[in-house]
Amino acid sequence: MTLEVVTFGCRLNIVEGEAIRRQAQAAGITDLAIVNSCAVTAEATRQARQAIRKLRREQPDRPVIVTGCAAQIEPARFAQMPETARIIGNAEKMQGSTWAALA
Image 1: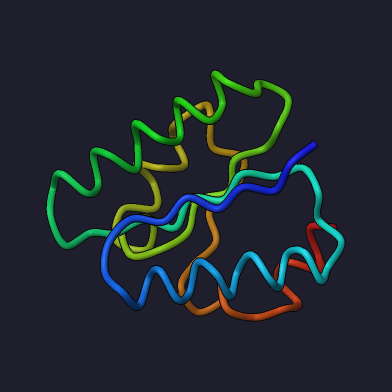
Image 2: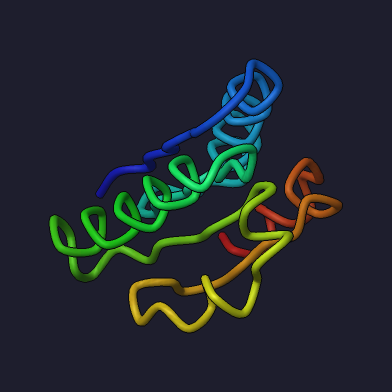
């Protein structure tokens, strides 16, 4: 069981990804993959989708949560991916209560 946060994009996303990791750990989450996506370029969005598929393929029983700008802008597209367990919007991703609810 592992908690993994994969972050794409800018420095802000990197900082937010680490904060998300700390909040998820504090909530007691031990078996989850979180993709913090970026929408600055089409390539970043493509890489996020590719990472979601890879994470699920590597550990089929571990849920994959998608958040970040690409998921905020194209929630339906990410939600349609069978590998995606849940989309978390940007307004919720930095709230400890969001991650506590998943524990």
